[in-house]
Length: 356
Image 1 (cartoon, rainbow, N blue to C red):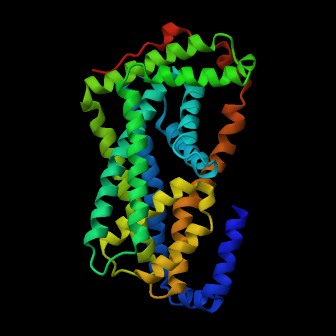
Image 2: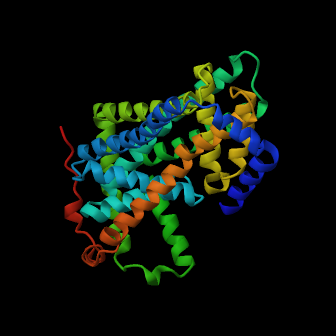
């Protein structure tokens, strides 16, 4: 991360130029900038809220009691983990599931079923958006660099693969068990089983049963997916609006909507694939891309890239880190909570009570 930041600063100094940056900053309307960029921050925060709201509704369907405020904070933590640790959409998801379980001692299966269903809805919407982005690239007048189309295609393929894996877990009753068996074989092969609780296989099997029952609830009553789908769609719209508001804050108001949609999915694809390693390289690429398509010059392009990356990358990291610090000592390291986890769960307490 530090190397990427240094590379971007050197790029700003040697290739963009201090004079070009100050010229771009000096031409800004401060009132216009503060108004639109503040809306951009609000849109970014609201998008995270709607992701948490979708998850909250899914948990409520499975009678898992939790607080929307807690899920909002855990969603930030998940983003932080995804952006810092290069295992996007896996480590963050596992962290969120763990945090909810740690708070209310509900079955891992029920929490995981809701979380993975929420992620499935998100990826389904993303796949539709990527297809739309590819279509816009192909019909956009003036053409788009081939690299943009290639990145969108890579993102679409990756989304389809991940979505297929999630659907496999949701549809096949034995899928999660097969995955667990593979993990246990790896653990045994590495002789790590001596560090794990002896009753772990039984507890995992109980959680897997609840996981399947959770997926079964959503399949049998798809109406419970309507609100989460709506919340996730609103979250995506807010994320796209962040791009619009950043450019509006710089006084660049003549761009077409397809530009923002394309840029949203391009940035998302690279950021998901590279995570923390995107620092520097993606910033430089965006500065040049914005200067070629939309910004008045390289100074405005670099400024737009910096402001956008703050909202889409640095803000989730900062807020997520602060959230980890806030809940870490109080909840994650709480001795009484640790004792409860060590005692395990009773299989009878893991029964789902779906809403009608």
